[in-house]
Amino acid sequence: MSSRNPSVAIIGAGMSGLCMAIRLLQAGINRFVIYEKGSDVGGTWRDNTYPGLYCDVPSRFYQYTFAPDPDWSRFFSPGEEIQRYFSGVADRYGLRGRIRFGTEVVSAEFAGDRWHIRTSTGEESTVDFLVSATGVLHHPRSPDFPGLESFSGKVFHSARWDHSLDPRGKRIAVVGTGSTGVQIVCGLAVTAGRLELFQRTAQWIFPAPNPRYTTVGKRAHRSIPWLSRLAYMTYRALFEAYTKAFTKPGLRRRFIAAVCRANLRTVRDPELRRKLTPDYQPMCKRLVISGEFYRAVQRDNVQLVTDRIDHIEPRGIVTDDGELHELDAIVLATGFDAHAYVRPVRLIGRDGLTLEEAWQDGPRAHNTVAVPGFPNFFMLMGPHSPVANYALTAIAENQAEHILRWIRRWQQGEFDSVAPTPQALERFHATLRTAMPATVWASGCDSWYIGQDGLPEVWPFTPAEHRKLLLSPPDPADYELRGGTGAGQAVAATARWRPAPSRFRGVPR
Ligand code: NA7
Image (tube, rainbow, N blue to C red; front, side, top):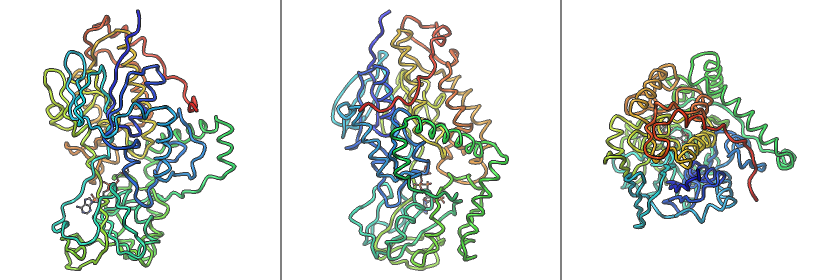
């Protein structure tokens, strides 16, 4: 039987959207388009440009297996270097010509076994598959402090850094002590005149140095390609072991907690140490990785403020003890709406079902990638993906591979449309819910992991188990296949679910 030629639309040209596009190209599928509302690729790495930004997953792990970079400058890459990497990969794979920049997908509706897409520029198109790669941490969350708009200095969210601010000698407030707030404090402590960190909840900090890679090391990685593979697989194994601390109580969890507690003891002033001591278990919130933070926060020009922000007036922030903190700039490192998957795209599935209706009890996706009632629609970094302190590049590759395998089956004519059944999603979600109480994220704290049902919205098992789930033949009973020559023949179809292709092919130059 001759193979059908599918058309695919990808929403988002960030890390995961680019990954999906490249995997399609590698599989010989050329009829795809990427819709990107911004003016460049890179997603979160394009949007976040604050001082001190780095990825807290090692560089040699946070990269595509098919595009290893021998030239990372440090153990943890600075943000601008990561942005250059994704930009370079997009260039080398010739993706820019396939990206509609400045084009937002407004709506997509499934009808007649195809997705009908409408964009902000008035473009209308129809495709066989729709892939959402819109990111998890995309919509900035800014608190509406009373009087915020009256502030006479600069005020902006961390993901919208105002580069007209020259921090030298300035009085700057950083609101929020997540990974972002911590990195900004480290990035500004030396240059700012006075830095005030407004902390609502203390964070556990895991200390990790960020050494530079040597020229000799980089040269070795350039001339011996399998070194990159070795490094990647080593980090992957280490992270598999490390992430077990999150999902199960035991020695690993106690060890990481002990390291965090020992790190906290390096803060000399007992009063400052007390203020920096969290009242929940280490790792309950996303673990902050920083070898610099406690040093930075003990500098004379840095002040930790734990009084609540009452309101903001033209000269600065007034805390609830009545003190006015006079400032030149306020940085809101207050996080993101991590549950706004796919939004604000209006997605309408089979029989007029909207995503809002499907997700009235909170966002859910079968096997983290697909939604009942939304055939031929897949998500990267969807609900319950393993996004906690792990290389999201690895997760994206596995999800892209999974999606690609469905598309290949479509190519063979096995079906015209595929969607998980509601019962499959219910079973899957019940399994996740049962596993949640053992995870550290459910041990009693608030964090961006927590969903509408009060439980973490992340993957409660190891990343290895997620990989296995996605790359094993799917349970035929879990899916409804319609049309094609193989409708109802799902059992036979899964026999053709081929093993993963070999990795580390190198980037085409
Ligand atoms: P996070 O981790 O969500 O942190 C946001 C921080 O902002 C956190 O300390 C919050 O305190 C604080 N926050 C939020 N709203 C307020 C208000 N209204 N007043 C005071 N403080 C507030 O976001 P990040 O950007 O740091 O990191 C997000 C992820 O990006 C990170 O986990 C990595 O995956 C990369 P709270 O703890 O809620 O009391």
